[in-house]
Length: 296
Ligand code: EPU
Image (cartoon, rainbow, N blue to C red):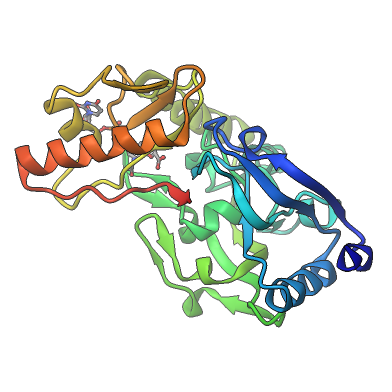
């Protein structure tokens, strides 16, 4: 296909998305593309419109369920060096969107910059974390939006804009950035003693390890917490820990985690999600909303 020649980045055909999701689930992407820079993305957007090929951006795939049939169209991953730049100026850190959060944290810790420790152990890229305003609820609610000074984005027409914090809406596990392609961000941190930063990171990691199931593939919390409390607690109270559908299983450690306990299909996870929604609705009259993104 001729349009592929106009790109500098890498393209694979029928790439299994199970290789690119934390769940280890998902059929093939018709075109799996790793553009070299924003110019390539602009070209891809133009082609996707012209050829009517759906366009998806994948981060670390940590909060994503992809259908077993796979994806017709383009799945784009920002993994080229351009999208993995990290630098600092005083207390500001420039983080491109393809950087993994653990790299960002290691970079900040090394330079004695504090403020992002609560992100420790959250799997994902900076871009994915910004799009869904990733964060924690305990011991206090913190999310990546709290750190933002500015975010550089591309709109669906290929125009690049620098959005100031006041131009961005950050909500609970959502942000107005998700309508754009996120290119990079400037985050504001604060100078602090390295050892203190390390301690804080360790305590966030330990809390996560003691309450969450991290050994089997999952997508983290499946449902958003409803206003009135914790989704995990409600699912637990319905007696659903350990419940299975095919290869998918509700974690026995944290009921808001669904695990791929071996060869799970997206349809197994969806079936389990439906039965959780039904049970919690019947028992508590609360409708759980998925936190994960679902590509069908
Ligand atoms: N609980 C149960 N049973 C369970 C799970 C939890 O009774 O199976 C109880 C716990 O004992 C606790 C309460 O529910 O009293 C809340 O649980 P937890 O502290 O684990 O927090 P959470 O509200 O379930 C949220 C975020 C997590 C984040 C943690 C820690 C959401 C949906 N979840 O979980 O984020 O790591 O707080 O800050 O906002 C994610 O977004 O993917 C995620 C895992």
